[in-house]
Length: 493
Image (cartoon, rainbow, N blue to C red; front, side):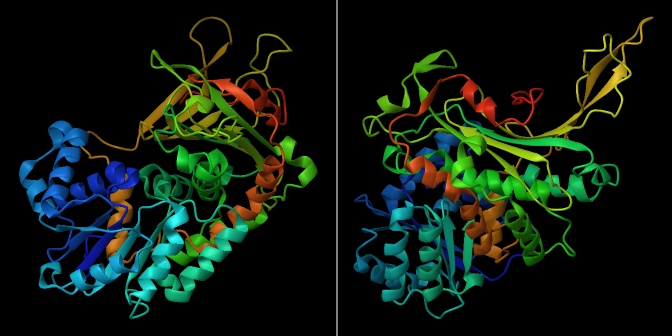
């Protein structure tokens, strides 16, 4: 994060009482306040539908921060933070709301900030209403000044993504648009670039000559958490794999950029997406798998199956687990499978990138000819811990020439170093106008091109979906994606 702050701006949060704002945005902004990283003249406006005034809003913020932060909550910081806020009530489709926002932004209480950040912490189905009403009320002018932050998913397929992009560009320039994927703000993901590109020990091995395959896993223990109205129309492929996991894939596979700036990095990521081998309609089942969680046990507690969740359509075919296999047809990665999977109600909550290396050309150290020694792995843990592990073979102590695998473990964080939430990094970048960790539209478009054949095929299969027990690691049938019998999902760090 940059240590320099630009001139103050105002910050309008649409959907400030919703799930995202409550869980992520407000705690992250509070921590930036605590670290004194917010400009003195910066103020926030929270939009919601609840019939509150400023005092009711501030009481709400205080309560949720106390519940989330516990002993890390500081009353003085909260008062300082809350003093920046005002609350405005209104419906997103009502142009009167935007006229009131414009009037309030012009009042002295909003400070000296002349540019405004509009954060769309709302359902994607409401994006169009907000964008059009901002323009109708004059809040998109002067063009080129204000900033628009758009949460994922950006569209629900390639056609809707293109339509949303055209709508944005009718009223905002590309440099005003911040398409956010919070995984790119995680320290470990950024550390992956350093790990690859700053170490001569690693970079020469990062190719098809040495790597057998790559696995990218984002697993959750939680269910849909009262978000059935959103999730049942979206599913795991759109909600996670098309954006978060595809972004992780590009960071793993990209070529070194000529310079470390926003467009150079994104150019290399787009090259990866453009190089992914297209999946034909008849080969979807060989490259993708979906399933839905059934009832089971999570952390000793019985949980219902997906179709028993409140608000879910009866006999819904929405996937809560999605796995896919991709090939990147370029010089570096030709023939190396990339296995991506994500799911809800799995055995553990963890995100990781696991790289398995090829076996040595001759396996000398094995007790019997039919035995195969374990391969080398590099495992980059993104959450819950941030670490890197490298598995190598050593000789076991004793008279026999037997080997065993040892794990070289390294935490990215030294003792006493605070762990930043990804949203802290990204929100400060929005305030500072730094677009390096945000997504350009051609990245979004090419990611949709990759997964669209899968989604179109699944949309036609409405009679059956595989299930897996909540609390497991997903369905055994997903193993059909692997290219060889010695490949299997890695579930441990």
